[in-house]
Image (cartoon, rainbow, N blue to C red; front, side, top):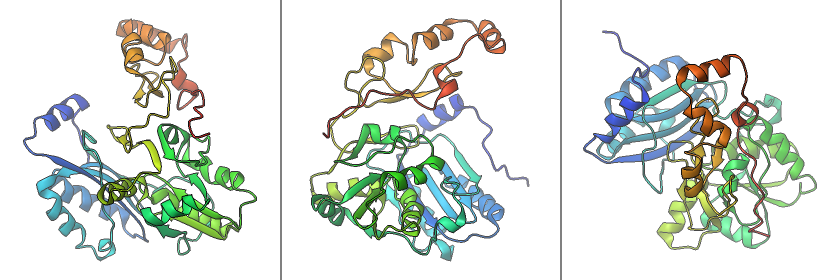
Length: 344
């Protein structure tokens, strides 16, 4: 019997299938840096086992470890965890649960990668056996109060809608540009206390090792990232030092940690924290759009994209073939916002 190891349904069918389910789902994430041999075998095994449990999500596997964001039926969580921990390498995985549920994933996609976070730095620039000290929510808050330097180990568009108070947010769109940039931004602070944070903790692991390798003496990272922090402060009824929304890389595009809106609509500059992908599939740029502009521009990032969407398919193909139109998404990964100085 041949086993299919990838999805063949279109998005419309997948969405319809998800919305017809009679059970609730839970969104979880986990990662681990560990040497993995035979990654192709592991990939096929996980896909086969997880499909049976109706698991959806995005998983990266590399020789250096695993990084997973998943949606699964609540009633399958215990069987899933039991099955996962049958692999002795995954016995100590720290599972993080989403703070706010929603339609996070529509299919299961397990990809083999060179790295589980694509920093693309030379191997002599880090040592995964030596990483920053992991701080829980309380230690992290206390260190902020003590004046530690806080730096966001995420892309700018993530920090735009939510970040820790007084955090340094690198103006970076791609992971491969991040580590050299944070080293530059932290120059002169090699002996100072550094606090790093990211969505779920994974990006801080190699980033902290990189900083230590480059002479930083007091490097610390938020254990479990913003996801665990949000759950911990809620459970312990502690006031959040993270303001706004935590951007997530699934169909929800974010979880509100606090009700603060610290970003602006990229079109009218009114307060908004709703990320969208341009409704013009030939552009598809990521940007922030308020409800009024969503109606005005029909979910597009500009009048150009809105008008292009009004054309019939043949005219669209003609313009694209003749390169008669260039969209925002052609030249950038995101629209550049005006800087909001709420923290200053």
